[in-house]
Image (cartoon, rainbow, N blue to C red):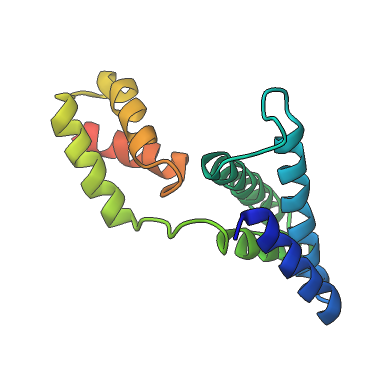
Length: 150
């Protein structure tokens, strides 16, 4: 079942259950699907990699918003962002733990021969490709910095 079909089925269920939080998140995902399908060169079809990419982007946007809302003491808006984050996570592959990311980054550092913080770009290029969809870029970046500073 494609992501679009999953979203449509879950939207029906959310409407029947009058679950506004789920419906709001599902509508946001559906809007991204439509946007991706209508982009020049898409030909009305999107692949799984494109789906994962825009779901990751949506997660990042919501995490950033959540952080801002919590700093400003806007718990009403923070709750909405948390609900949408939980919903989007259901459609993403299982994220790696920090220990798993460290292990992967350490292997990449050894593989690329990086030895100083000046090699961060080289390591990040490889790490971003290998861990795409499995870990947040900000987390990867922090771990790369930490391991290269040692």
